[in-house]
Length: 403
Image (cartoon, rainbow, N blue to C red):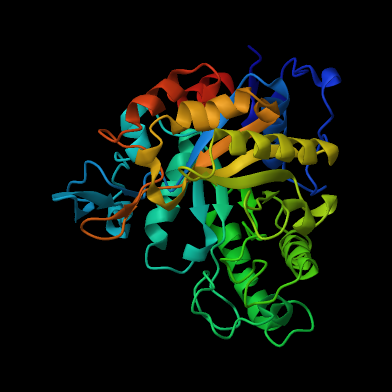
């Protein structure tokens, strides 16, 4: 096995059969990227081109869960037991260990990738998830961010349902629009957060993947396509272009890899909203299976398509978000070995760098968002088999093979 230390860009014998594969651009789009960010990029690039391993991630893995809740966690009734949990700010203030994690309790390991959300910047939970981000980074995990932004025109939430004033929201926040300064102010706030909080204990910027304006070809977000916002594909592309340019060039942030992650079932083809090679490091897909509608064959078709687009543009490919839609994970008990792993190996999907699932979160005493397994869940045995497969890379493997 080839070993390399991605944090310090020490690469040893990292050829990975690249002569047999379409080449991925050898550096990130940010020509001033930090040494650590270039190292992260090269690690992901090498994993994708190796074809024998793929990193596995989860969004907010140690922030919310449905199993094993106990004090000092905040606990909630779920299915008749006080087992749902949340890691809260006072735990961070006391440096309490993040010992709970639903999928981790199934396999006794943490994910190789931990996801967070810039929408929570300024939120009352900020101290908690920033602590968890630093803890994940200190363990050796790769950090990713998405951005479920509220509508900067109407102040409505990210989902457009019920947002009656969303017409031309993107145009109104781009240069020349009547809410452009509002957009700049929010990006300024996020940039200040990155500079002050997304740094390690020595003040060195932490490299991370930013999944900008995800699922932008779908009709459920105000920045999406095919809804009452009436955004055009050009609007959507310009939104991504402006965001990258503002953060990278105007705010001087050089610890970011930019990922685009359209939905596999959006209102318009993913390639239609591609902002161009100058604004993208990673081409991903957010793809949820649906029992009886979207099966493993659908996933396989999607993975081949994403890999073709990524390699044609010299980019890294990834499954940026996946699970079973509408929390029906229990209806596909072999989702991880068949829906993901078999789909990866039956296609060009092993030329991807990583796959990441969404998190679990209680929504009521009897209901929850369930996108990852936990002990006793119908998918738990399958997830353990998925974990034990030599091709999947969780945190222990990441630290031993890519320390």
